Image: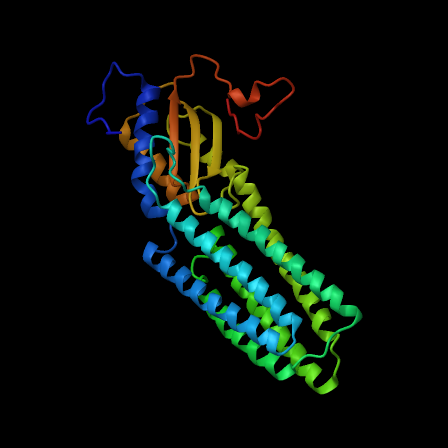
Length: 339
């Protein structure tokens, strides 16, 4: 869509404003949403996937040789992490695809679904390890402690380095956060295995292996629950946690010429991008492109809302959000209507 080079008096104000700001949001989204460059993100995922794939093979083989079900179970857990990393990497690539006539927002939403699936995958892997640990509590087998500690020590290095690859930007990108937590918790599991192996070597308390695994799994589940909650909320188009919808409404109401705001919707386009649509009641008429551009720029800078669509109205008729027209449903507070 091409931005008009001049204002046409005969063109409806609301339509002009809607189209103009829609263009404006797309012009900037490619620059504002990513915490890491595409090459940097791709290299990190590729290196982490390669290292962890190699470690899965090593861990499983030495688990067989040492008669350690703990190592073999952890190899299965690490295999799920490799699949999760591949899923996140694919989502990063898909999220950068340009919009099309069919997918007008592109495929940015895949990053949210990847984060959600990663959380579910991690919880599923925890369930498998917990089942194995519970079965071993009754009759814990003797294990080759030295081999277990050596392999688990390698796991600390591999998973710790992999977590470091995703440390940058993980606080602002739910998808990278999922990959970061996968690797960090794997390093924690490996550390627990080393400590348990050390104690078992000198005491013969082989029950420490399953008990230690259950304690570590509890910590992992607690941390993963937050990721699952946040990803689920974004998948359901909730307002992202970093955005205060009340503050956004107050900001829009405070703009010159704005007497009311309604149909305010804020949701996540991806794990790093936020979108907004709103109707602004401006009895004085369309203020011009420059003031509207300033509103869009302020929404990006102050609230990290990269894509905004603002529709101007004169306030001569009563407008109601169609989502509130169902009998018995009152979403006026949720949509922040102001009159």
